[in-house]
Amino acid sequence: METISENKCFGGTQGVYKHSSDACNCDMTFAVFLPEEAEFAPVPVLWFLSGLTCTHENAMTKAGAQVWAAEHGIALVFPDTSPRGKDVPDDEAYDLGQGAGFYIDAIEDPWAKHFKMWTYVAEELPKIIGANFAINMERQAITGHSMGGHGALTMAMALEGRFRSVSAFAPICNPTQSDWGRKQFAAYWGDEQSWGPHDATLLMQGNGFSGPILIDTGTDDQFGDLLGTEAFAAAMAAQRQEGQLRLQKGYDHSYFFISTFMEDHVAFHAEALYA
Amino acid sequence: METISENKCFGGTQGVYKHSSDACNCDMTFAVFLPEEAEFAPVPVLWFLSGLTCTHENAMTKAGAQVWAAEHGIALVFPDTSPRGKDVPDDEAYDLGQGAGFYIDAIEDPWAKHFKMWTYVAEELPKIIGANFAINMERQAITGHSMGGHGALTMAMALEGRFRSVSAFAPICNPTQSDWGRKQFAAYWGDEQSWGPHDATLLMQGNGFSGPILIDTGTDDQFGDLLGTEAFAAAMAAQRQEGQLRLQKGYDHSYFFISTFMEDHVAFHAEALYA
Image (cartoon, rainbow over all chains, first blue to last red):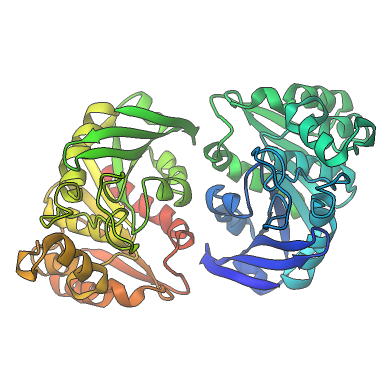
């Protein structure tokens, strides 16, 4: 693991690191914020999964999460959203290939060799985080934005017992019924009968989540019709799932929306992480 | 004036606007954050002047200022750092030409036609802000980073009575004695005897500032030798200037440093703006 940069930030350290990924068959970059408390003992961790077109960097610089993570003594991990590099397949569209891993493991060519973002975020990266940082892997929570909200919700429900709480900002909630989902699943997985159970609404209709959920989505989200919020809302209600779905008046899909509600999300996770 | 974008943010609006600038002879872009309170009455304003290579966008997205401005009911203005466009002269170096206006009015060719950032920020843009936004121009404060800290300090001292308070993050304090200053003054102003009084240390040795000053600079600032902090510190002390100069252990020159101390700076200005 190579250190790309480390900057002091809110009394802790915002670092960026690179490593050779077995899952993705390429170098992967990720960012970790460690609060000051990590100097003395391992701290709880909140994962932030980013959306389409993003790298590890967008949320690290624009989500305004470190101030609240520092206040609560929580680490943050920002993975990249796909494998990258000139040897990694890509597509001209912003929503396929590099920057659009969708947190699933591709089985179709040309994607299958590198696009293993489920295995990367669910298995490989946690081992690296646990081995190299003062983070208590018994106390994990997860959040994300848009495609990363899809990743956060599906991981929280599929990896039972891993995360104490899950939240999301404008998540893609029902990708099997959306152009943000069907296109990528068809490319990475092929025929619809090969699609994995990576749809938050379907998972909610199954077992749901064992902890609390917090979702914020703007009423003026320019991609609102692609998110499937109504299907997930219905599934949450039918499941009697502990949680809150908040529709925030006038907010859109941007990082200005994310940063506005970040304080609430970090506080929500802190309550679960320190319980 | 053209609206480029407006996003709801912390209950208010983060906007980006473009207009044709008489001072700079080109289109100029700037950003304004208006807190919710501006819907009901004009609010005080804090100017943020950015550093080398930045546009209006860097601080708007990375400084984490809106959360505190919303808390205190203060507007933020983020000007660009230079004229821009393919008809505007530039230089290969990051620290001259576009992105490096240095908040002065050039008199030498090829810069003189466009590089009038003093007149732009001190005269033209305030008129546009006052005419188009619910901002109380009787209650202004100013801050900035690096080259923008130089701009903030020199404007606060030169424009007597304009600003109630001034602060800066890692400001260039003594440009006439630094490679961050001499190079640009020589290019924009020519011979040293033509240089204007745009050096914070020299202005502090003159009349100083009529209100309070707050400066934060990191002890691990990678550009520390270019800032002239020691000269300004001596001048502040000799002047018996009301103010604080804080050297923050372990912090560098980045936006992670800026965002860490932004809460303090906005609170500092709020106290002066609401006095």
